[in-house]
Length: 352
Image (cartoon, rainbow, N blue to C red):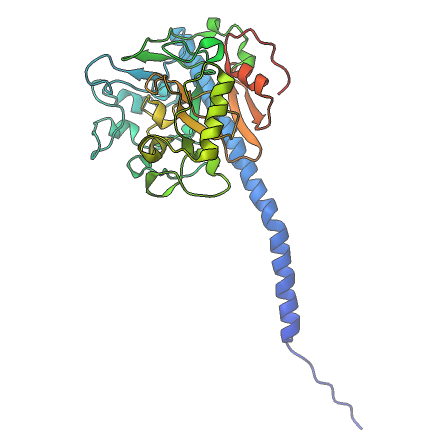
């Protein structure tokens, strides 16, 4: 008898399902590694952006013997005219002189039609890569500012630290000049008596992606971009921090149900206003909830309680006044963090 052999072509259904399952398992194993690699690349770019800001800040100082003003209001009746941010001042040192040369200092910095309106939209209405951490949201909650976004803020110091943080007495790198309250003196390297390697200059922060411009969406990163009501008028920096934490725990959203100032944070990089997130303070630790400012202080004068924050795991990146960039843990010792925020407190800064 002749044996007959049948050649089987293709896979059985069970074999095909096994192959698909193996491929799915491999993808599941590889996907976190791919995401981690992408985030590592974004984090590196974010660090390089901060280094660019540091170089621009130092070059500006070489020319003018001071750092650029961080918060400003025109002395004229129309206070918003001419109140350009430190980022605008540094544009020529970031190879963006073309935008800088288009500015009109007799008009508002960047306020689209439908709000106040300004011819400076042409110069300051676009996205500047050096002002944006790629790990951050690509769009801003406030549709009026969805291109002119930014995610780096300058350090105004520690509010109510040694009695400072009000009426022209900030103790960080940033300073206020303008209308309404006593102006700060300009800040230069000679004023950083704690040492430029021991003093923060800029940090990153998370923009609000909330619906309808409120910034009140839920999720694991909510506390990083949410801001709450003004902290109570308390005499010390640590009491201010606790008041802000209490506001966050109670869900106290603040002025106009938090829809106005919160929707501004991270928008309009050209506008020197606390509401846009142009400045931050060292009262709140990295990634802690933020408050708009303190009662008895002035948001237009830079008395901020906005915190540093990021979508990097475990902390945020900071530019120090010497031009170096450090990743600071969200679990940093409070005294060390407060010392890092003050330029002239005379503290001994430990490891961080």
